[in-house]
Amino acid sequence: MDSCLHQSSAEKDWLPSSNGLLGKHPFCQNCGVVKVVSSDRGKDVGYFINSLSELRKFLERKGYKISKAQIRLIIKEFEEGDLNDTYSTPFSQQKEVFIDLVKRYINVSRDLVRSFV
Ligand SMILES: [Zn+2]
Image (cartoon, rainbow, N blue to C red):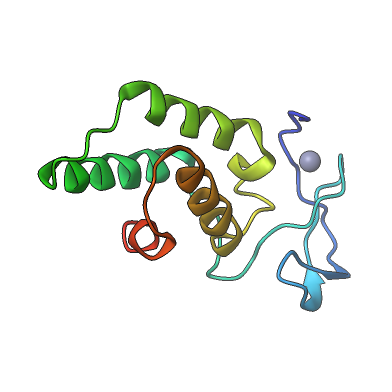
């Protein structure tokens, strides 16, 4: 994973953004990723840590125990992907991958996870 700090170019270019729409977008002049400019801007990892802890509380009230290790692994995988890059990753995309990750470690339905994100 690159650790580019992203510096937007002065000019915008006609580029497809990550939601596939072609438009005039600023992009990073160092690594070239397209900046998310819609309201679908990505959220940082803290947002997903909160979602996870709310989900955990909910499941614990139902008698389903989630270990700290499970939480840690989900967050670790999330951070290792490029998802943490809020410059170029829209929230809708982060959300889908997050739901997949949670499902891999915790036996719950997608809909339940989605209601906490
Ligand atoms: Zn960059």
